[in-house]
Image (cartoon, rainbow, N blue to C red):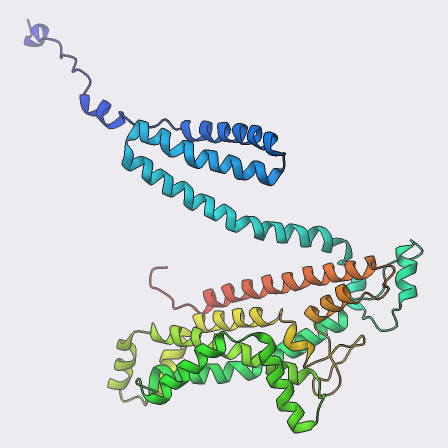
Length: 377
């Protein structure tokens, strides 16, 4: 007979104790959701005792969860895991608290602005719109007439001139600070004043531009280019700081390689340094535009307010979307029937938010398009 017939069966190994040690003292996956559901129920009960409201319910439920969840985790997994879970849940709570106002703002603007975001708002101005027109619209005898076309034109025109002025100045200043100053007294002075300009109130920039052009052309001089100069004062620090940081992260090896080939410094900056950092520079410039496009205070004292379309930035008053919103809310076209003016204001606010979102999207696309290409990607 074959020897295999008398082979003893393979013994069954007992289960390794290592597996049970790895899974021991671990909270089940369903524990945290169950604690969260219980916190919601307890929070609702406590809110009912104190005078129920949705905000109070949410706060009490979060407080109960932040107290109960780490205690339960500590009882199962130990004090270190409990402390870790407490910090984790605090971070999540902070994130939710930061997102709630943003969602609330977007929801409020959408709910109030979408009904007024029509072709009439985008393609007509307030020229010829009177209180009688709004009274008729409020009474249901006609549509809400008048739009923000003149404000859109003013916003684009003033922002264009502000960008045209601030970007070269900010870019050249940052190049000097990074490539030429070498920590000298002039570079330190420029850095100090740029930091000061970063924190000045926007109304101060408007008063500076109004005073400057008032000195040159006479008092009460107001037109679009004056507002552009005011916005330039606000944009330059942002452009300088962002460009400076982008230029600093360009490796010095790239500069040294160009110098070793005999390339002059200005040409190295133009052909090597700036192309390497162009994605971050373009993104920063776009974000600087988005930062000043919603300014109101400096424009009130520099550009004035108009109800008709003005294409000339060097003559006559101009209206921008922020000032249009301000006047529609503060001085309705019909004081007895403010609803049409409020509808225009909310629609213009939604339009302004969409423009800022579009600028941020453009910044991301520009940064991706000009980002240095990495081999294998």
